Image (cartoon, rainbow, N blue to C red; front, side, top):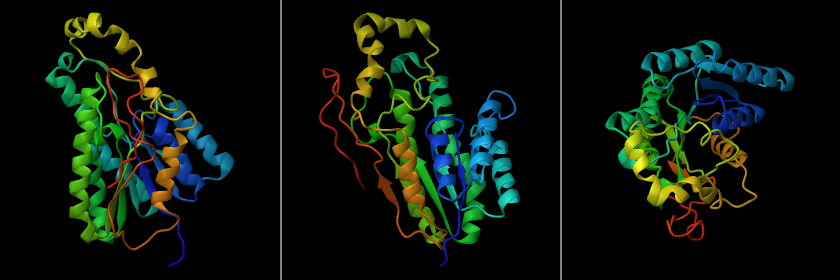
Length: 288
């Protein structure tokens, strides 16, 4: 089969891993729809920058309005991509939202909001895209997870890691259910990149301020240094671009008639966390 560019949707592509991945895939010759919400206002500068880059480098790269919290938005985004390009080959589930704070301080509604983006968002996009992928008998779902769901859970990130663990479980079940339709699955597991993305910059927090404050006296220093402690888990030469590079490798250079296996790929090393140690134990990679 001759090499042919694939049509790819990347969710959460206004910044961070999503934008890096969308650009890297387009530079590798693919046709990429960079999904992001609020393209007409808050993310309008990101859309303009993306389109300028595409024009300057001759890339098949464009933005598409996609709010993973809305089934209507997901349906319209996938429909728009199909109208523009006539097909869809790959979905990269990257959209996510990080929250920081004591687990107790998050209300049930707070946790539900984290799950809405990190877990239910993938389900909405799948429900929009999978009828088409099943119909053509081929496709690939790439899920961007977290290394800490594979071993070690730092404190004060519980809602986020719980949501990412749920996403992993959903991805693994989907892998078994979709393979006979010729649709493959890959879970990419980045390390804790505290720079190179807006993950920590845009992190949310709990709505119960009183319970949040109750943890300041015993854990104030640990909480203040959390980002720096996590950063020390990553080798100094590590680049956020390595996650995008790994996704490019997984997607590959050409369109095929199906994927034969589900894979879990560590884009960076995973590390065990110890509250008494600033860096945890020696990093170890996780495979399945």
